Structure formats: C-alpha cells, structure tokens
Length: 426
Ligand code: NDP
Image (cartoon, rainbow, N blue to C red; front, side, top):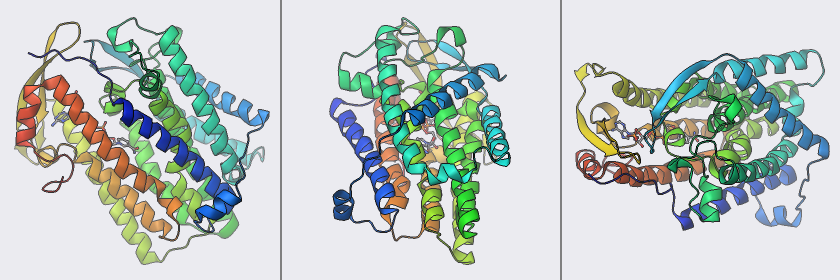
C-alpha cells in the first residue's frame, strides 16, 4: 500500500497564477464599478480615469469590528459540536456548527438598525465600492496573519500543519489544516472565514442591493436574485455538516485562498448580480424572469441531490439511490500516522455519470443569474465566468489528490467513471 502523504493542493506556478488572477480581477472589478458605474466596459477609459479608493481609518475600524463581532457570535451562540472527517494525519477534529443561527441574528440586527434609522439598509449598497476596497486590504492583512500564525503559533504540532518552506505555497495554500484559537476550540478559523464572514456578508450585501433597487427604482430584479441566492446561502448553512466533508474543509489549509477568497473576493464577485441589476435598474420581461427562476431551481436541485447522494451514501450503508441498492468500490488508504483506513467510492446515481457532476448544478445556477443581468456588461458575469475556471481547476486538483490518497484504487475508480465533470465530453 502506497503511503498517503500531504503535498499541498496546488503546484507552485499554479498558485502564483491564481494569486495574481484573483488580486488583479478583484481590483479591476472595484475600479470598473467605482469609475464607470457599469456604464460601459471600456478598459481604456477605465485606466485613464483611474481613481483608486483608499479606505479611511473609520472604515478599517468598522472592518475590524465586523470580524470581532462575527467571531464573538460564533463563540457564544450555542451550536452543535460535530465530529469531522479523518484527516491526512489520521485525526478527527470536532467542529462547532452554528452558522445558520449567527446568520439569522446578524440579519435581524441589521433590520433593527435600519428600522431605527440608525443605518439605513441602502447605505451599504451605495458605499459598496468603498466596502469592497476595505475588504480587499483587510483580507490581504488577514491572509498575512494566517501565514504568521501558521508559521509561529500553530494550533496543533502535527504533520498536517507543517510549512512547506516555499513562501508562495505557504502564503497562498496556507499552513494550518485545522486552525483554532486554543481557548475557543472547537470553533474553527477556516469555517469562520468561509461561513461566518464570507457567506453572511454575501447574504447581507445582496439584501441591501435588493433594498436599494426597490427604494430607488421600484425594481424587483435584484430582489429575485437575492431570494434565489438566499436559497443557496441558507442551504449551505443548513447543511453545514456536509461542508465539513468538502475539499475546502477536508484538504485545504487556511491561507490566502480561504481567507482572502471569502472575505475579499466573495463580497465582490458573488454579489455582482444584485449590485449590477440594482445600480443599473435592469428590468426583465416576466417570461425571462420565469425561465431564469426555473433554470436556477433546476440547478439547485441538481446541486443538492448530487451532494446529498454522496453525503447519505457515506453515512449510511442502507441508503438507496433512485430506488436501487448503491453500487460502490471498496477502497483503502493510509494516513501519516501509519494507520490503514477503509472507505467506499460511490458508483451509482450522478456519481456514476461523472466524478464531479455536482459542479454542473452550481454552474447552472450562475447561468440563470447571468440571464437576469442581461448581456450588456461583462462585469456582471464575473462570477459565472470565474466559476468555470474555479470548478475545472478544482476537479483537476481533487483528481491529483485522490490519486495520491487512494493510489491504484483511484485508477480503478477512474476506469469505472471515466469523465471528470461532463459525461461523454470531459
Ligand atoms: P466534493 O464535495 O465533490 O468532494 C470531493 C471529495 O469527495 C473527494 O476529495 C473525495 O474525498 C470524495 N469523493 C470523490 N468521489 C467520491 C465518490 N464517488 N464517492 C464518495 N466520495 C467521493 O467537492 P467540492 O468540495 O469541490 O465541492 C462541494 C460542492 O461545493 C460542489 O457542489 C461545488 O459545486 C460547490 N462549490 C462551490 C463553490 C462556489 O464558489 N460557489 C466553490 C467550490 C465548490 P474523500 O474520499 O477523501 O472523502
């Protein structure tokens, strides 16, 4: 049996390209939004009118308060303590799960603050460009803090938290797989970054854009997009335990990718559909709205059904897919503590069609939202375009990682399920 070792999730050159791509695209989105207000996608005009926003001290303080308040909620609000998967070193950590409660509390507080006229909802939408830039710098600082923490103050002294010695890889991919603040265990910093900062900010910003569009233009397109994306966000929080078994939580360490990504990139790219439609008063015909909603709901069903098939199969031996007993491949792998573990790879349902058919549903949802934005301006489709890149590279690195983990068994699995994402095509 080949030993399963940890080699990091992405090659050196790949990480550099991704890093440059995300920083540049974040900045260009912000510049496009703040300079052109989406009037025209003209790069020359954008560059010649360049106005770099620099956040004020107050804005940085708000950013720090938001992080601190979100962390406080994560720690004090009761939640379920759930055992996560066996990781690369053979350990199973416990995670505190309470994203849904924290999201609802923040949302209600936000409504109260608006009602009291203390901070009207649409202000967040009006100042989105400033918020985005503050998050960009803040996200970069926090990424550096994660790097420093991993290097000098690792939570666990295990193989899974050893630096690889290459600054780019250690900064981009991170050092710690399960980073914690010792006194707040089992609150997990990676789960906090994605769930409590990224997902909740996405929800709140989307809502304020929808609110802005209704108040300013009596336009409901952004509200439709908000409600559709809310299904996805609330679904994530509701099925939080499932998220522990995804690549992010099982295999990726907390570095720039999982810190800057949720904190700085998600509020820019993921809210672009509502931001664009709200500030440009985009109206659609009823027919287009209905078609987009149907396509989105179909994508959501595919996404959820596919992910549930794997989740339920892994947690129950009696689980049936489409009324039939599940077909599967028995596999084993070694962890770095030298122990041998058994596992099963599903061959039935959508998992028999392609190794990552669950990515298709996600992309169909993006396509539906793009349709609601119209096709006049490329910046509103940044998430849809980015998802193609994200999902394809993700499928590739998961394949490489599973080959290292399962060795010959993964080769057998690939013969049985030869397509990566799209059956008969890729
Ligand atoms: P998966 O949830 O598919 O997890 C992949 C892991 O599942 C593999 O590493 C392996 O882990 C296990 N696995 C693979 N094949 C099988 C099988 N046949 N049977 C049982 N287990 C298997 O991948 P992701 O974490 O990338 O995606 C999860 C969801 O999140 C997707 O629906 C995706 O679309 C979505 N997503 C959304 C993003 C966004 O920005 N909106 C970004 C990324 C993902 P092991 O065997 O080690 O347990």
